[in-house]
Length: 307
Ligand SMILES: NC(=O)C1=CN([C@@H]2O[C@H](COP(=O)(O)OP(=O)(O)OC[C@H]3O[C@@H](n4cnc5c(N)ncnc54)[C@H](O)[C@@H]3O)[C@@H](O)[C@H]2O)C=CC1
Ligand SMILES: O=C(O)C(=O)Cc1ccc(O)cc1
Image 1 (cartoon, protein in one colour):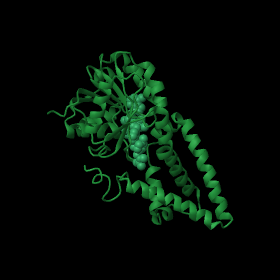
Image 2 (cartoon, protein in one colour):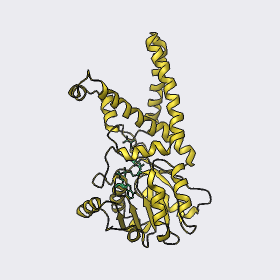
Image 3 (tube, rainbow, N blue to C red):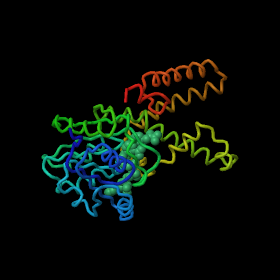
Image 4 (cartoon, helix red, strand yellow):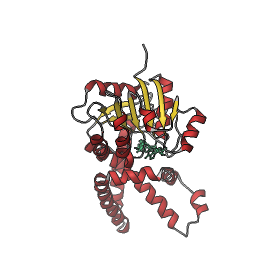
């Protein structure tokens, strides 16, 4: 039985996610052919040089021509503008999806631009790295990671089922969620943590008493993790915060309250408060490990799910 899910796939924006999807599609034989478009000539040249996409196109009209699946892999702030450009060029019956880190705002941007005769199935693979650009992708990125589908009301179930098979073919575990809930969950698990990492690295940089070399030389694991996250693409993350504003502010408000409570406990020497808090948070980490949901932990994830 063929693993092919779509005859022709078009990738728009050839960065980390698009390039990982391409290599993953090749690995799994999920597409008959894959065409790709990038805005800058430099990115298109790199794509041609490294064999990223079967055809690298110089225009949006060329890339979406006859495509059965069109994947928007651009920063969330420009999804609507790209959708508006491709709308008149789409093949009737095609599926359009995106991989944006924010869903409600992207749906509000893209949905109204698309014609009624295409399926729009927003998606978000919960997998990435701090690297970006066409050279950063790899076929295994989505293996055993979640991909959340956020189908809007009235979406054709067959088109959603196809999309699910596609992401499963890329190695992901697929779930469905509504957009508002997705944005709140991601504000807690990804967006606020990124902002905290950016802030912590900024604080270290501002501390003139700690020279750059000391920060690098004596970096403990916690701070190293922050610096990795804080090296993520500025355009992408600017757009995430501007488009998931309400949920992120809600979580940051709660974070600030908790931080103040911990700050007070330290000032007052309230060891019980600190101990109880850290005991509670340790239990959460252990719960994640026991549920087999930490795919980075040694001997977990893959084995636990039998993959
Ligand atoms: N990096 C990550 O860890 C993850 C990113 N995402 C989402 O995936 C999407 C793509 O992210 P990455 O691949 O990491 O970014 P990237 O920075 O590696 O690639 C984005 C590409 O889009 C291009 N682009 C920007 N504006 C454009 C426009 N107006 N028209 C055409 N192309 C344009 C850029 O030149 C770049 O080639 C974003 O929406 C992001 O929120 C989702 C999951 C993980
Ligand atoms: O590199 C990391 O730690 C990440 O958190 C990757 C990531 C970034 C953005 C997403 O929307 C999903 C995953």
